[in-house]
Length: 315
Image (cartoon, rainbow, N blue to C red):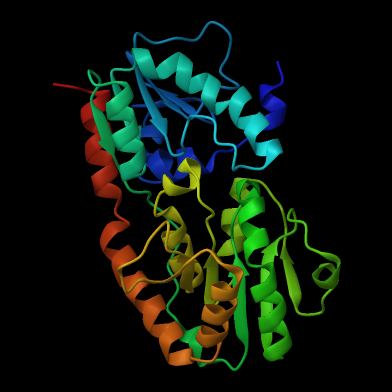
């Protein structure tokens, strides 16, 4: 009943894990788009996260279920997101996962969770595919310092961790700007700060048209402890490649690679790491380039198409 009020009319998950790579199947009627998150052949439906907005009476004999977030309750998430997740994604996972012919996920932790819960159902992991162009890093020649936080509302608590770092870096670097979604709340000392820029809180289709216009030098990705955050995919690194940024992230999510700078989840460490990186334009560019190289190698439509073809039209 309340489902359509809790989800958007377009789905980043469906776009990044199916529509971008398989667009020609939709235009040639090999696959029909039933709802923003549901696609079907004559025999099979693919459900991305949930089936809200599916017409009454629609069904297919075979179900493939895709999930790119942890589908069990996590008390570390913001209350509003916990409620939405319980009413939408968790409900759909309980309904569709046990009877799916295959489960597809976006990260190793999610694959391990699915195999543990459903040992008799095949589980597959795929990477996202962004059809947007990646940045060329020419913006690193500029004298400004553009910093961003591209987390959605499920990251509201994560954002609080880096508020001291943002305050310090804006004070110490007059050439710095910090951008984030207009939907996030900031404390009073930052809410009207002249070096804060807001990215309009729009639907997915407008956001993807908007984000390619932006270039950043540093992108912050704090992730507090919790099963939901640990299970997040590497999709944010592709998004950071689209805007050309060096990623500074929590080491609970990713470390041991030159494509990010990782830090522990203490406010003091975030302040130190961000200020150190803000002073070092060469390192910013090197980390952004390492990530761009990795994304160029992994952001491939063919890998998705091969998997989906095998699941939709099994031989």
